[in-house]
Image (cartoon, rainbow, N blue to C red; front, side, top):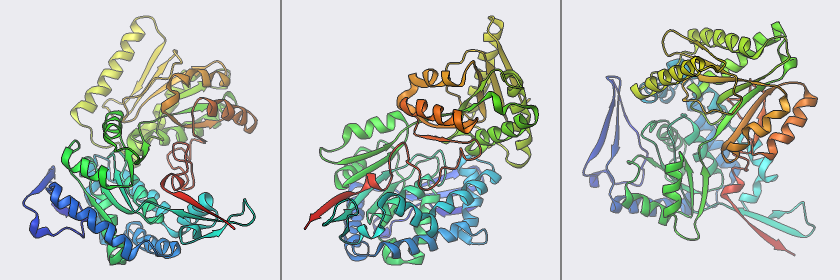
Length: 469
């Protein structure tokens, strides 16, 4: 059995901890976190601010990038004990298959390396040294500008995709914010391992970061964290976001990454027999990565009529490609509720077919994958875990009106069409709320410089000061 501490609390006096939350994931993993009370957490928060003043506020951003890169290098190295611990424990904790965990950690760690971080800083700030001091403003002669991050940030993480929490911590460190990260019960480990790696590279910087878990809704702890932080970043479902938003003190800044819907669309020109097979393979992989748990994962694939392959035939092809993926990227373990949701989705589709709707089901004998073809083109959220809708489009440019009812929740659209049609489609989708348009192959892996939910993630954390001379 793997036994691990799922926390990084360098400012905590462990002798004052009176109890521990010990959770087992089958017979494979046991994780330990301290049971905090308000007094203990208050001490952690005070020491985070003090550590920032000592070791972070005046540190050159280029030095921070180097330290983060070295810590990330440990998680990127398959031979490193921390990477091996992550790969060994995360399948039992998250339910993802070992190959999926390996893929996620490997791909996401690329965004924490120096070249990616320099690209992010350049894309959003131009001159990253604005985080170190006043720099000339290229937009105004005679003006200088300076960017300040919060002194203390509080991040609340979701547990659906390992690595997202680490990305959020990295962004916070880049803007020189001491940071408390509250992990989710579904994945409390990887952020703690990253924080530990950071502290082993640079102990003083590691003291500016705290990562731990407590049950959501623990009012005394959450009130204290919300009141103490200058900025709060929250990832999660509508209930989590609403609960925290309602308790935010006046004047505090809140950055929200709530639930999102994504989809794919295939134009008729991409449906020639040979081309359609390649498109279906890319679409299947987009569905399979994260077992559809990511905000970037497609719930629906729209297929335009009039190509070499009809939409229902494309659905059959997609099912074949999902079956192939089970060999090298198998779907993870399901909870009883998730398995029941898949069976319900299949039964409901069959019932609609008996009621006269044009519905077809392409599915594994178990619950490994499910493709639901439905002639009704309305955007229908999936129950996830490789359950995907395929729906027909009479015309590619009908799509914007079909997805408009979900305008506040849309994120990524992946398209297979010509450049000319793509440009027109992008304009239409942008108007209804899509913030990222890409191809099916890149759909699961946004670049480090993307506008996350339509915003620049570093700029959301900073404030500007102008000096006019």
